[in-house]
Image: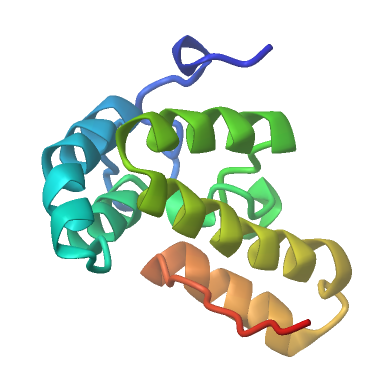
Length: 132
């Protein structure tokens, strides 16, 4: 089983930016979780921390500059986030559901590859609309 201890700080060390460690991201998430729940608001500070930690590109293959996290590693991060703020964990998980679909099924498309590159460099948050 993958645990938080399996993640090396600076996992994205080859990338130009310097990202926050997972523990630092969790500290930010923890700090704002109560107000996010009380005010029933979008966890802006937490998403900013995910972005600062490079975690919005965690599921993108390393060949495209992403973290190359496995599903097990993503689940471990999701669980850690959920222990601090359920809203942030859900946003993280839903974002990566979409990003992994693009990575798995869209690499033949130049437009998708460019979007994945932007997710890596700009740490974009992917949203989706789904209905039954």
